[in-house]
Structures are given as C-alpha cells and as structure tokens.
Image 1: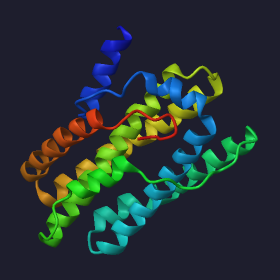
Image 2: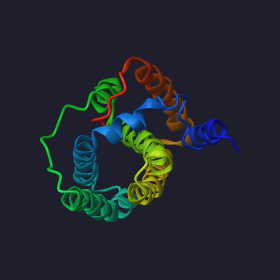
Image 3: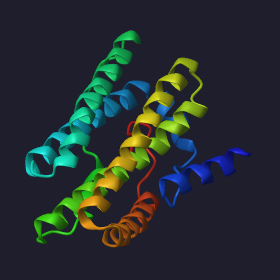
Image 4: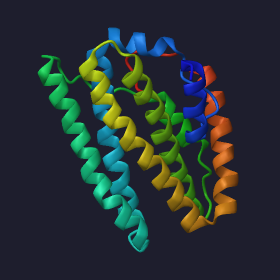
Amino acid sequence: MSASNQNQSSLHVLGLQLPTDPRWVNMAEIELEEILTDHAYCEQKAATSCISLIQQYPERAELVRELAPVVTEEWGHFRMVLAELDKRSLQLGRQRKDEYVNALLQFQKKGGTREEGLLEKLLTCALIEARSCERFRLLSLHISDETLRDFYYKFMVAEASHYRMFLDLAMLYCGEEKAWARWKEYLTFEAGLMETLTPRGDRMH
C-alpha cells in the first residue's frame, strides 16, 4: 500500500476528512524542542480535561470508570515527554496558545442542557485525540530519528484508544443518532479549520 493510501486509510479509521500537510513532520523535526514542549503541555491538558469531566459529571459511573485510569496515563505521558527533553538536553518551554483547540471550543454549542454540554465536551475530546493520533502516526513513520519513531508509535496507539473511548461515551450518554449527527458536524468544521491554519513545526495541532 502506498504512503498516500495508508494515510487515507488512517483518516478513514479516525473519521478525519483532511490529512495533515506533509511538510509538518519536517518542520517539527527542525523545531524539536518546541514540538516536544507543546506535546508535553498537550498531555498535561488531556489529563486535566479528564479530571474536569469527572468533577462535572460524577454521577456518570461509566464515564468516571473509563476516565480515571486515563488521567494517570496522560500524566504518565507528560512525564515521558519531559524525560525525552531531559535526555536530549532540551528545555521545557512556556505553554503557548493552542489555536486549534480554542477553535474547537468556540464551535461547541453553548447554553443547552447538561446532557448536551456533555456531548459537546466528549466530542471535542474525541476529535483532539483523533487528530493527535494522526500526527503521532506521521511522526512514527517519517521522522528521521529512529528512537523518536518508536516513541511516537506508542503515543499513536494510546490516542487511538482514547478517541474511541470518548466517542463511545458520547453515544452511551447521548444516544447514537444524536452523537453521530453532531460528530459529523464536528468533522466538517475541523476539516475547514485545518485548511485555514498554517502548518507550524512548533505545534502538535
């Protein structure tokens, strides 16, 4: 299977409509300290998002059960990225504005019921995990450093399972029909967003 066909297959599995600009991996490799810094904060924010969902919806037993171990996993990922920075004598920089995630948050429907709010949060998390998975896959295949290929392969596998988990929780609590209909709207919005954002080697998204 060609690289192009493999990428299309990956997008299909994740539901994404638009692939990452192929120049992104080369740009990220040039700015390794920056991309690792941004990656570290992405993992930190993923753990925080799971904690926030548990705090906001403690009565949702399956959600709490599923997300509690992910908090530990995501924080472990944060520590893994810190260790990679240390190993390479690189510094953790300051957290930067995430235009991609902020745009998804703006797309969320506001002012609905508590259940509708949960749906928006779960689908946003699912989409962030899906795009992260796609980018980790590209790094695991195309970055020149063989150690980093293995490093990012592990993250790709983890993000794929998280994406599916958030989507399954959305369908469990909000109904498959409603969740799928809104998910398609998110995917269409995200494809348009990807076309407007300039690829940056210092950002995971």
